[in-house]
Length: 73
Image 1 (spheres, helix red, strand yellow):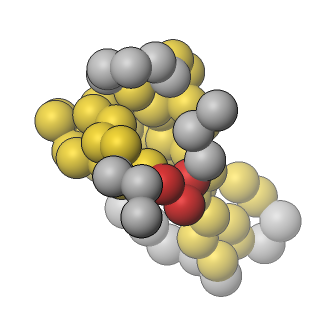
Image 2: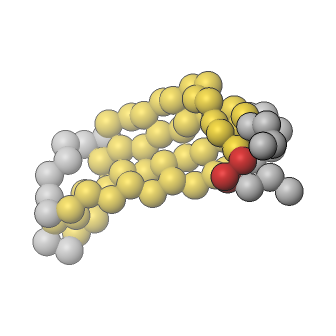
């Protein structure tokens, strides 16, 4: 089993869309792994702004990563 401590990642592609201006009291970004395997690892992210208890999606993206296993020491 591969652990994060023994694994590195290389960015193959990174796409992000700005959907609205980021105005508010706080910003939150949440990312999810959609598919992880030997190669590639496909993710999805969503960026939200919060103002007066109202949540607005201001951006989203789809990074694609390649997993690199580091040699055992």
